[in-house]
Each structure stands twice: as structure tokens, then as C-alpha cells.
Length: 71
Image (cartoon, rainbow, N blue to C red; front, side, top):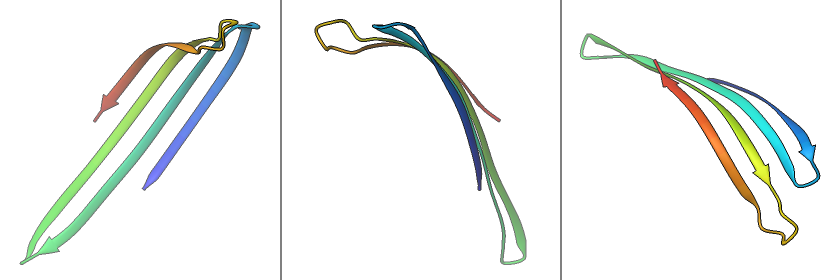
């Protein structure tokens, strides 16, 4: 199993920031039962862009745009 992720954040203002990330994982499993061979695998990729807002009242808001792919 292999998984990798990378992300970055940028503070635009004292109450607003941007965050972007990308994650990927690849999992496979091959085996034999009764002379028959089985192969299984999954590959997932996800990327996101987030806007974080923390107004003066302490409440946190997040706006998110996500892209995901299975293949």
C-alpha cells in the first residue's frame, strides 16, 4: 500500500486563508484459490481547494471545492 499527500496554506487576511491539497493512494491484492488467480486493485486521487474564514466572533467557516478520481 502506498499513499502520498501534499498541501499548502496561504493567509490572505487575518480572518481569511486559502488551503490546497492533493492526496493519492494505490492498493492492490493478488492471490490464488483452487488454482484460480484473482487480482484486485484500487487507485484513488483527490485534490481540494479550501477557503477558511474566522470572523471576529470565533465561528469558523469553510468553503470547499473537491475533485476526486477512482481508476
